[in-house]
Amino acid sequence: MEKLQYISQGQTRQEQELNIRTALDNGIQWVQVRWKNASEKELTELCTVSKQLCSEYRAVCIINDHVQIAKEIDADGVHLGLNDVSIETARTVLGAHKIIGGTANTVSDVIQRIEEQCDYIGLGPLRFTSTKEKLSPILGFEGYQHMINSLKEKSITIPRIFAIGGVVLEDIELLQQIGIYGVAVSGQITNRPAAISEFKKAMI
Image: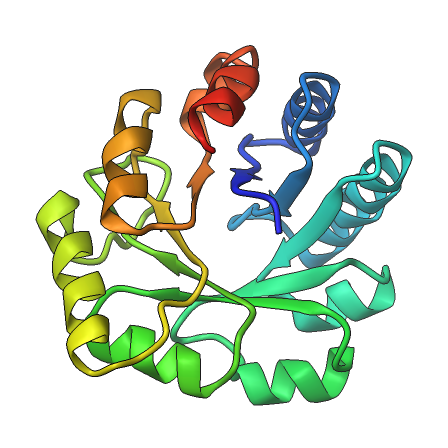
């Protein structure tokens, strides 16, 4: 599984599409299509184009929240928040071979996600980020360390955890030392697509 995820950004379909295309041009191999304030029609159109683009670049295409759209366009999977459709329902709709990721903010969330057998966990936010409207309590590095320690104490195998929320290049080394698998990045890549190769180099 890729260690670097790009979460798409943009206020319009054109902006979103341009940002996704630019990220792919710069070597991103995993795109999560996320556009919270779109109409269903516009979102479906964006997801359809994104899936085609990702297929051309041999990249993974994940849809945020919308299981039905993911099924319709045959995306590689979905990413679900804690208040979205359950992992179990998504699995029933999409089938066993699709990727299903889940958001978490606390140790109990992480354990819930492990029990639900999602393929990876987006854990955050690391720090404040303006790209998310309803921000969960900020974890900081201490929060991530606490999560990993808690799982180890309970003898739970550490799942694939992606740090999310205001992640910058300088964070990678410490996050990896803590035991975090990868990172999901939005603003840093949208604003400077060349950062993709730097993130990739930083992640062993």
